[in-house]
Image (tube, rainbow, N blue to C red; front, side, top):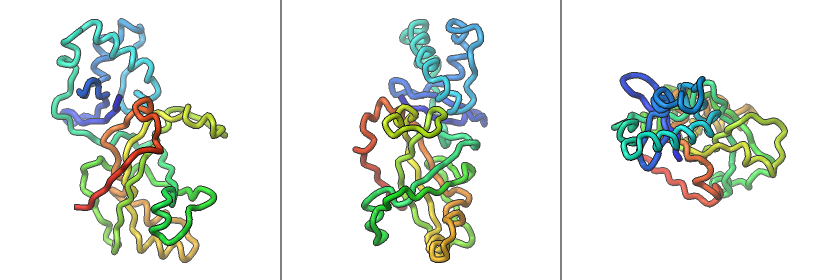
Length: 226
């Protein structure tokens, strides 16, 4: 399934795509949650869905049994305005030169150890919002990335168990002020300034659960500049 954030009547909400339709999962829980649990949860953001994914699946199953063919009609969100599938408190960890082809473009070899940098969550915008260039920008480059959404907490996780912590995937655009990045690299400074400014991280439009993508290493991602 796909998980999405959306705006309805000026209110941020969350839902899941089920049989091709976006359904308001908080509304489903509000109406039929008491049939599963006396203390049924509310869903305010995507993290709520991720943390209670098994319950979400049970809600949908119960909803179909109760409403039958009317289930989608009753809970469908029509003409949704999709927003970035992330909350402000989330942490964004990025890898530099993580694609061999990209490393070749820069005239270097793929690194032996991961090059790690971070982006603030307040850089995030939805997939179709305008990217606003900062006043200091001279060259702004897009970098399309596969974003991995971590579904539970972990520490010192073995590589063989890493996929157990993955909830799903989405698409990210790592917007970079390239000239500033090069200048900082020459000085041995971190990439912070060139990677973190308003609208520097378009994300979405939704999160696809990992069961629908059995091999994330065999995907094609395209980016075009208008």
